[in-house]
Image 1 (cartoon, rainbow, N blue to C red):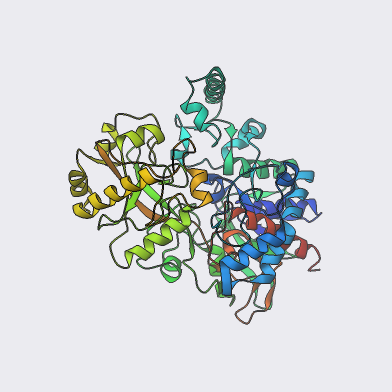
Image 2 (image 1 turned 120 degrees about the vertical axis):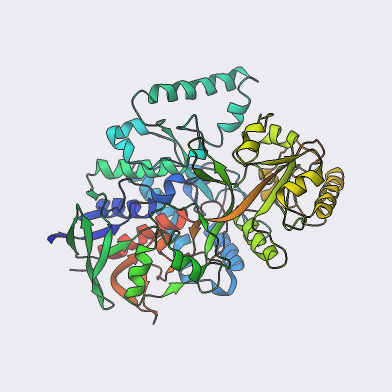
Length: 562
């Protein structure tokens, strides 16, 4: 066994771990970052990359006023009795500070989202704009050969097998023949992609979570922060009275790292740990996860071994999205997350096995899945089915089927979508009650005429309208389902991240079952119990706290230890 001495050991090179290592280096600490896989990014690399940071200076500079005080009202109302107000206050207090710090000292830079409603915008303190920020797009060529170290997005989010596009690119690509500006924009990014593929495994114009990961990685490389790849943590050194380091598996051997100021656990949570899923998640345990396959609860298991507490006690544990199961050309299956591009659009409903609606389809992806769980108690709702017609698919797309698609035969053959010339035929193909489906569609079509959904209020919330079709009247979220063939896609619950993790204080110090900090042990990202207590307040609910508590952990550790 070889030995190594550092000030701070960070375990896990997702956004939380990379942020912690970068900030530690900036603060003058001798830091080592250990990653169990051969790439950086974890689940963050496949995410939208949004951070929820109330009061951020980017949005203020763009003219969007917001306050941490109002956000605190919102979170306290949303989370309720289980709220850890000291941790919430620390998150809100440090959020703008962290983003400003990174902006001034690193290449980790952000843009304001502008209007991007909180997900429960009918709750006191909620905001319509100003709280969400996204990383600036990044040129992967700046990483040279190390660009291959950045975990790519899921295949379903790339065109032509490797070209990333941002949300703002989509309407311009769809309307590429509608204006000279759209055509030039589309041609420019496509030609860039073609040139990239002569030298790189995928396109180097990267956006969203991939841009966040690449910016963190680029900043770490510029500061020569050492990163050990293929280096899983085996255990920590020390115990409940104090952690002084950890043992890592490196190149088939063991390295014992002495960490004078502590160990930061950022291993990504337990998304693919069957035991933890069964322990913390609703029953029956959802089998699908969008988290990185290496997220098997390493950090949480280590914490529990030391007697650390896990929290929150009462929540569904996952941060959820409905997913459809894609069929890729190579025969493998993938998961397409139905986040915001289809469910809120006019002319789509979601039904359970009774053929009945059970939810406002335009709710956040997390709330949509919570409604699936609730409906499943009385009628099988896993899977649920998104119902629309062929005209809807051609106009808006549906899941992995792009807008503009008029021939659905390929998707029918591979089982991704079911169609029927009549609603009864469609009901038979997907195994739902035909009378219930007919009634649900008839009710929807009546509501489309009036613009009012008395059953579930689709279109009532600002979030619904934000993701709907503003050009559609009278309600941007209600439209008829009337043009055969009728279409259906099955959707299942999948976790994007997890809420349950190691209980911490406001400085991300891991707490024992007695509520006392375990000296030298910190947790952030999905290893840390969610500050949101299992709720999902808005876009960036995971990444915002991940970066903030990485910062707070390092700032505390800087003053600790020998």
